[in-house]
Length: 78
Length: 501
Image (cartoon, rainbow over all chains, first blue to last red; front, side, top):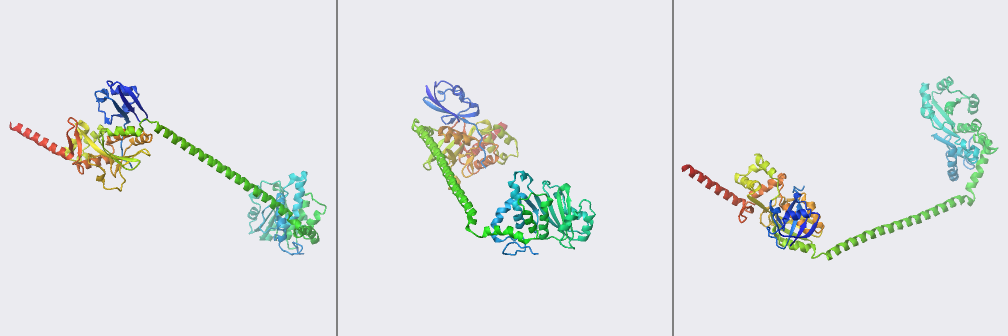
């Protein structure tokens, strides 16, 4: 089992999960709406397809941070 | 004969009140006013202290007699002086205008003395021919002062008004008019000799008038007893004033206590809030910042960290541009007028491979500060500090939206960043910052133009793009240009060779 810290803009929880589960299933189980968020795994942005990889596939052996941040635009500040 | 105003001074004009009687006037005036009003009397023919002195006992009598109370006010006085220029109706309209005809208190008789200064003969002739104003000759004769004096006494029942048209106005005439009022208006007199006093007032018997005035005058000019009322009023005022001072003081101190209690409440709330935060910090396993420290030390984007002061850290990060609108870039490519076409082909080719083909990724360097005390992200440096180039460390080209001295644009990310930092959720705040540095907004044309210009010109030798198939290959724009030209030349050679073959 690995400890995953799932953080969103409103909530943060620590869960113990099987490293052979996919990231998507863990996010869905914890009710994180990743469709409107950019998901970072230990500071690295996930690429298309990474969500369906397991934690083991992505090299996570002990613990990790899975952070979903809101997709927002930058623009010129007046 | 001369009418004398007071026993020792012969004042000719009745409205010049003897000084000794001024206080007395203050007492009688409000009483008189209940019984009589005088909206217009410039020369004070009716409205003077003598008339008030005369009529005040009458008003008092009406006020103190229950059956008579509903008959006050007793009369309204009015005077006017007019010139007659031949137009009788115009003159009459100016005398008895609609304001008088429609007055609301018609039940109170109006005593209206009208002096005609010019065109007297003509006016009185026309008046005599006017059926609306019928002269009551018996009264006119009584009021006539000499044989040259033209006077008409007329009553208009419809507006309950007594008109006294006169060729000359005088205080004496006004007093004579007042003398006929008890009989005319059927006043109930307070004492049997009151009528004699009124007659004296009208100027026929000065002795009686003196009899009325003398005791009042003596009362007000001799003996200390006359100060009693004044001292009693003073004592009353003094008490009232003292009471008010104490009441005000009590209210003031009560307010102070309330303010103080409100402030204590605020301070207690502050204590409670701080205690809660302290408790949370003391019971936090390892602490939020410790978690953040561990997290940041392993973070792939971080290139450098600097402690600015006891509350702020400065960070240099290098991140890929991952979030952008592909369609917006395609529109730029399709539009030959777009700023993209100001650049040579190799540059456009590079951007196409980055944003459309995904063969390369642009990496940018961002520098910013985080204030951990107040919980917000801040520009890396103050605008006056050093040169623009000194802010970055040359790890990569600058992030288009976070450019020293020019842009500090976190856009819609900012509330999420600051909200997380304020709530001590540093890791979430940090990742939102990183996400913001991975974004380029193609609709922000000023920023995008600036970015193309910078990477093509000033920062063309800085690391900029990475080959996604082989991350070991990292190129600057300059390097890409060389590579592009080499590839192009080799293709041309192959192509030419093919033709030869």
